[in-house]
Image (cartoon, rainbow over all chains, first blue to last red; front, side, top):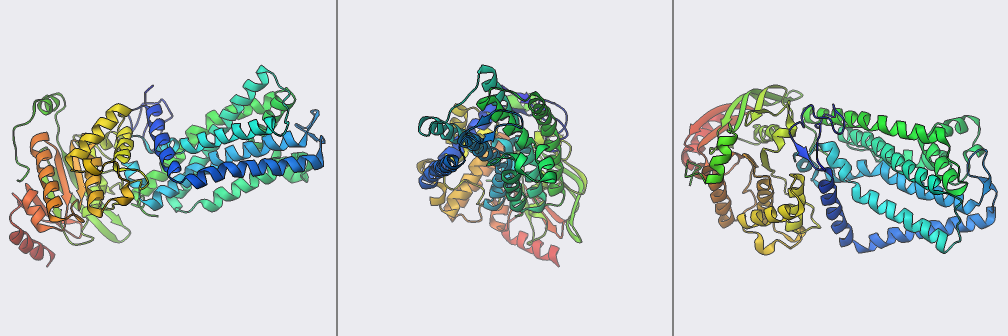
Length: 294
Length: 256
């Protein structure tokens, strides 16, 4: 697969041919494969943290399991749905939170890491448009997070007795929503990365956003428990929609169509906007000659 | 030893006929960082096969000029191109034509071997895995790092990392090479090897080479033209490079 991709400036969209990148043929998959090989090799050279992060997921699972024994079957997956076990409710919540946390923060973190280690400037002087480079640069973290999510849910089912109530349509809806939400959060991550390109420090923003999601997104408890204004705010968060669709489709075999469609539309709209913002930030850094600074 | 014309291999001759090169060109480019003027109306041409050495004190604008060609810095005004491609308007195409060696040797992934690093960067040039491996091996051979190719970069000496940076710049078979103090940390023998390589690339592969340096012997040994920058302006041009003593005299005079 190859495509003509637009440039650094983000004036175009994936697949468009105009602008600065025109004439440069970029094959995204070999590029992603190269980043996967690079990051796998680096991660494997630090074996202990590699395994400890897996252990961390298991500890969270135990934590949620004991909370589930306390709460039992007293939560609803969606506002008007049937009651489901707290354990299943929270496992899906924490798993999605982990995955989307990586989607949201990895781009900015990786970019910041490249700034401080000195690899950013050389990466951005290579032929691929920089937005492709930064997105491909987090492919390993996304794959690792996805594999960890699958393993976590697998252990929840195999060892802790978590049960699904779903169908083929429900599973497909869950997969589509997962992909769309990862795309949406990567787009938001690209905007955070734009912030890092210009202001150099963005950890506070990404950390705050991730914490706010766990507070407002209904990870550990239904958003119905939140007080009035917070509840209203929580209900317009794409993260909440994603959790609603995921829980409803996997635990009660229902697909909330409105949230499903909204998520897909938001994702399609958000990526080109994020690319444009990132391109503007990069352009500014190049004009101010601050690209190599950290 | 200078990058003068030599017999051009058939593949390069065919390539040049199919896509004529014009090298690196600037017309009146300027760049200021606030009140500090880094480049001030610089006109420069580095034709294919030429080696132009930039000399000047710290802060004279050498690295800024190199970074403008590398697309890391956008000039405030003026025109800048590589092989006829406007670097400001079309940085994506321009980047595929240049190989960059920065003075900063941190620009590698230190937990990976030299070979793995080069294979990764070769993939960024659009090469498939087998091609990337082949190109990486060739580049490692060219800079005499084949024997330590599988050693991690954090176990390389500074000189080895410098040579690896040169190898990386060759991966995309660039028509222009930008070298920012390429022999800064090298021992004399390695410096000589790099100079030979640069001259070979210029004379045989018709690569346009722009090299920023503080080493007058290096400049006199490899340059077909020496350009002295003073506070962002071209103060002097010395065709043919000259010898180290005359370059030193010219530098002193230009900075007075």
